[in-house]
Length: 457
Figure 1: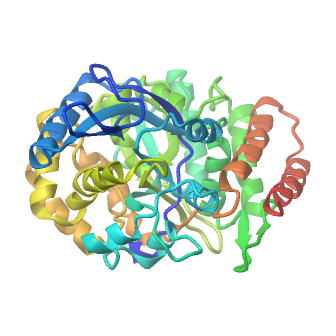
Figure 2: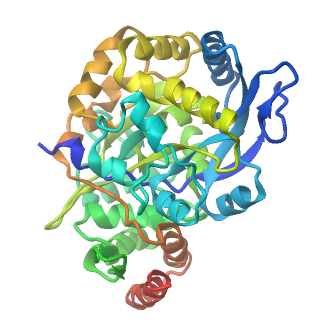
């Protein structure tokens, strides 16, 4: 059994659009409002989240403001996207408090784009609570801490139980090898006409998922040289096997489906609509599938990503809650209060965990979605007993994941130029999915050369 203490948090390549939350009017820069309160603009949900999600947030907002009457919370729609995030950050249009994936944390630290929270982390007593490896992801070269790790996940295989049944497959027994994934995908497509398997391919998510499958097959796409440099290792047998797998699904089996330009949001939308039999993504995506995309919980299933090869693992991920470096001292103080209350206390305090779970459950929001703990497995499992009366996700349909994930070795995403390399690999994935005669060997050789150039910048 592998310990989650080995998880290296990294990020998902999801998205970054920002706009005012319906019904709220945000001050341009946060800070003091006319009634003397500190206005704090905080990230909430991606555009399209259902009304119940906002009801749950409104409940939590009222609870927080009752305990902190000097702070006025202004919710702001937010979803992180690799290609546009830097523009949003540079333009000052992000909230005062937002989240970023671990893949971006080192770059943001190097660019001075995160707020130092070392003293606040120490005062709250959290510094010694985190896995040191996780805390390293938000620690700068100066030894200071620049964010609060708030959640983690492992990669999972998400599948549609209804499509499984239509194809004569047992929905309680998802595939456990990549050969079985291919076999099941063809059966689903032949029986239903739907995509038996699909994969993200644009907005950095193609590179993300290509990397995830490389790791699952025992390969790695980058080697950290432990001296500030890194070596690209994209051109390996595991990455080649992944691309050949995608090629065969698309061009030999016709089970991939017609959509080859999906990203995190659109693949979730297609899956929730019942158009995809299986795909891989973070284990925590169930919450967004139900909240933002209208998934019927009865059709959902979750298993572990198949692993094979000499050194396989499951790609880990997660994100951190951070504060804009441009806020003034009162806003920073309010931001720390919010992060502590909204994100952190429920991880280690029973009363806070129960209050959070009750607010979510009362608004029909997901409670109990499988994650990997940022602290310890023991505390995480204890927290599940705290909130047991409020758990409303179909955990029985997730047992293929929850029963087996601890037996897989978590592997963190590469730290250097992560999103830039993912963007480069998007093109490789798209070429394989759009050109039946794509030369995979040549694509990988060129990608490795191009990635090394990025790493050497």
